[in-house]
Image 1: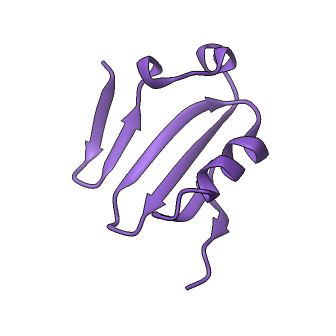
Image 2 (image 1 turned 30 degrees about the vertical axis):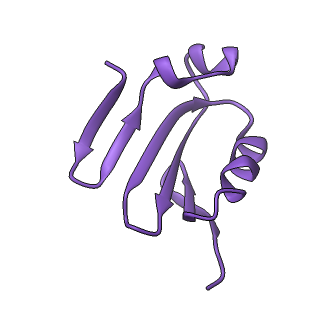
Length: 77
């Protein structure tokens, strides 16, 4: 499955959308990106968390990033 809805506002992103070969290897961290509209995208098997989150921060629609369930970053209003 490409995208798996975990609830009304959360989507777990499937391997078909991955571009980094490391994302196909088991292990790593789970990163959750929260958008302004409340929707969440969950990415698993993230190996280079800082680099991945820095890319997400460039998306102005992302307001919060969680890594393994803990707040990693929050956009200032």
